[in-house]
Amino acid sequence: MRSRRALTLFLATFAAALPARPQGVSSSETYSQYEMRFGDPVEVSISDLVNTPTAYQDRAVRVRGRLQLDASGSFRSYQLQNNFGDKVRIAPVSEVRSYFEGEALQLMGREVDVTGVFQTATSQSTSGDLNIGSITFWKYFGEAPEIKDVSKVPTATLEQISTNPGRFEGRQIRVVGQFRGRNLFGDLPPTSQTNRSDWVVKDDVYALWVTGRKPKGDGFDLDATLKRDSGKWLEVVGQIELRKGFAYLTAQRVALTTPPTPTAQALPPKPPVERPRVPPVVIFALPLDGEVDVPGAARFAVQFSKDMDEDTFKGHVVLRYSGRPQAGDRDLDGVSMRYDGGRKALVVDPGDILRPGRQVELLLLPGILDVDGMPLAPRHGPLPEGSQVVDALRWRIGL
Image (tube, rainbow, N blue to C red; front, top):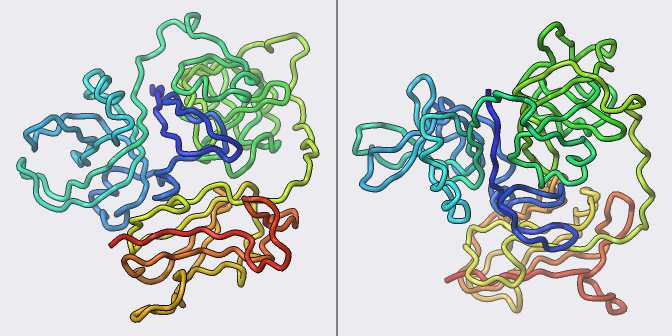
């Protein structure tokens, strides 16, 4: 069975800056600088990377295999291998290197998940292996020992996990909840399901995804697609993992049990709390606003504080060179935009190699709205009367 331990990097939060915590993400509004740069990780096999490496070049991937030492170099390095002998090299980013190096020998020969960016092989290794690509990873999960005594596993309530998930990431815990099938009652957002075999447990108004094991055990076998099988109280032992702010319990043991209290029940979801209407603002950009020495082939991502109405960006976003036109300037008429609703981020592709030494500016014009119809507000106080630009971000292209 598998249990998980995670290390996750932080870049920014939507509401306020938080200190980095290697134990895991503590908010659904926190995301990794690496995932913003390379996109959401796709789950692939090592064989996929070996057989079709160009399909995953420079993409964020999540892959599983047995950890081994890579003997092809003169210094200690690592690779993952599957049951067919396919291999991929792995190397941690600097922020997690010390943690990984401290655990690598204990994880040797065991199943490990890594999440990182894949690059195809550039040459044949000294050991003769061909087509061994590499993954530079920022997150990993190591296989944990099998549970021998459930009574020694600490118990956590679904309320505790839901209100402070980062506290539990990587920890082996026991939870008790009512079986709710494959989210048959809409207890969790449908988009948060990562696998069709995942299912839900719930206590009061708090729900949790369970993955890695079917809802069956000694004397029972529940069908996650049937409402009539819901309502049973289950004890699940496993380890918590966070993905995009949602908690998932990778189950190692599932058993029937009794409710945590005589009157316990799974209540319908609470109606959303009415919140004050506030306008959206730009809260983050990658590259950072004002950054110099930006690559000429860069793309620009701008993150907003609220979900935006994608249609309102059309005709209200301008990317151009700052100042007077210079000899050799080309019109940036190939600019394309893509709105990432999950990150509340607008990604702007210039469609051209930007000129070295020039400053470019991204202008956000009046007319950009959030999904509630609220107009974009400037970051630095009210707009001057008659202003034609709501906000502007600027970068200097490197020489």
